[in-house]
Length: 186
Image 1 (tube, helix red, strand yellow):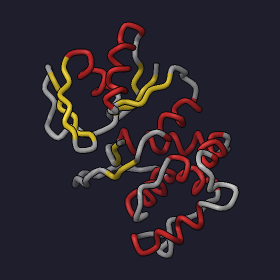
Image 2: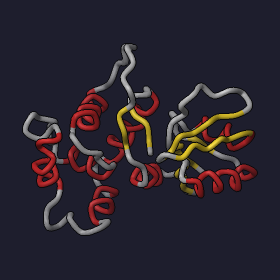
Image 3: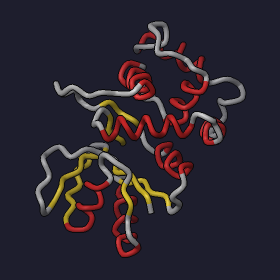
Image 4: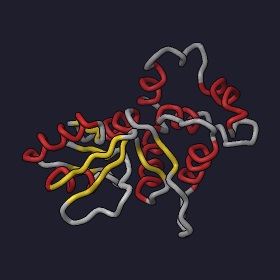
């Protein structure tokens, strides 16, 4: 199975355990669960069959999203079940490619939490993060540029963007931001 971890570690993990903060709850993980969560924190994790039960327990806690398939659409489906949040800025210099830079601007400045499907749509339509769409005061304008009568119904946008020609590029950019610790997942 492939998976991604959700939540943040408020303290530096030790070799024996890790504490995970997720939606106001603090989960203390040890052993296999700790290793699995840490392996999927900044990159796509892969579990072996003997760890599937532990992964399902983490999923029940809400701190892991997984898919039994290993195709690129499965990674997109995992990310659609996660909220993408900007990480607190550190003063380290990180080099981002063009796609990562565009998505980073959207994630950091949009004024609302954009979903994976919404980021894919913005990339597909080549909508640039401009001043009239960024910030809390422009939430409505951004929402109106994303949602139309064809995409407003529940789940339609996710299904449409799963077939988008830019889906793979967008997924790779989000995974790049995750590995460079610019974002975290909830």
